[in-house]
Image 1 (cartoon, rainbow, N blue to C red):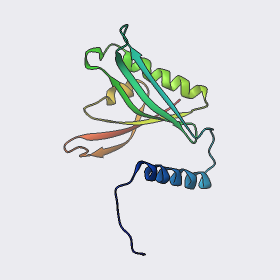
Image 2 (image 1 turned 120 degrees about the horizontal axis):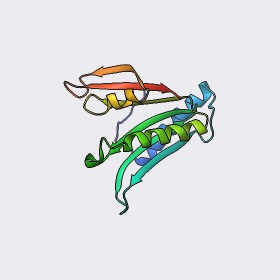
Image 3 (image 1 turned 180 degrees about the vertical axis):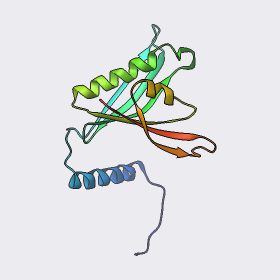
Image 4 (image 1 turned 135 degrees about the vertical axis):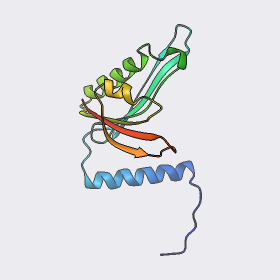
Length: 141
């Protein structure tokens, strides 16, 4: 191995790494969507414009939906906002040809919520964080 140094990446270098793996993936498996990454992000706002809930997700490369973050402000939980947002991004993804959605959640977050919405656990990471579990879930759309 050649001489080298390890440094913290700049924003541009992070982009270079991301682009490198995307191009490698494209060389191995044909992408089925264009553009390769489509953000599907939504918020619910109150009458005063305050954000009450939001969801960040991405439709990537092979028409797969990855739900990155779903958040509802504490005082609005259990009122259906999460369900509305999840259904909305699934609907938008299906319109673009998506057949599979996946996400992860912790045992102290929303596993039962996702199970109620048709997701199934396909993996569990124990002690992440310590004494907790991280669940990986999927749903055929």
